[in-house]
Length: 263
Image 1 (cartoon, rainbow, N blue to C red):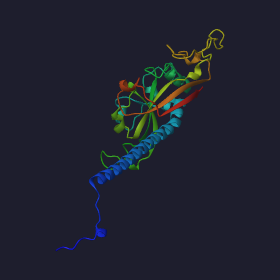
Image 2: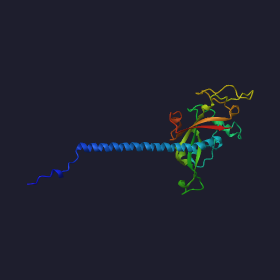
Image 3: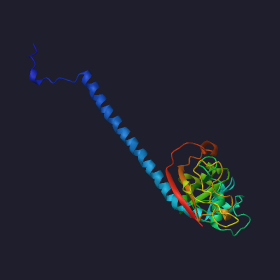
Image 4: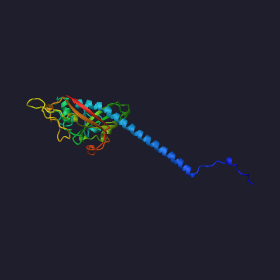
């Protein structure tokens, strides 16, 4: 005959309801933690993208002050690291037939028609790339030592207004490039922007508020009355999608910068 058990020595187990409830609480805690981490990672990514855009602002301002330094990429230039073409090789009427024209006149002709941030806008691309050449930094006949090579920030004007995937490999681009949408600024509103050819004084007509059906500034820089040209630069992350898919796409820019180009 077995002796009776001492009730004080018996340890009751957890019921199925208690186990299920505990697992549910732990699961909710884990999901909350994952949600917090996901939001944190997204914020970190946004900060990195914004910092990349900020680093490109200075380079873009320098490029607009000296537009001859803007790289021109056509289908062939995107595929080679040593591209020797620049904006003046793009076939655009930017110098008015005078090769020694001022940098302001070139920038003015480039941006004169950018009356809105739609299909009339001017698109430039800012990206960091490794500097390579055919003579050095090779680890083999057709391989470059990209990780030991210095880098630079480049501003490019692309044929077809789109930086393609060919440029990513051909130009040795690091990270995500920025596409920059340039349009004339509302700071022009209320300004007497055009010179009267008979008096050589600014006309009394002032720039009206947008939307502008035509450009609010005269076609030629010699007829422009102001000593500066204000533009708005909107920075977006570029995912190498075709131009037609983003030219009028409604998206929030990473950074919006007002830039004043002086004569």
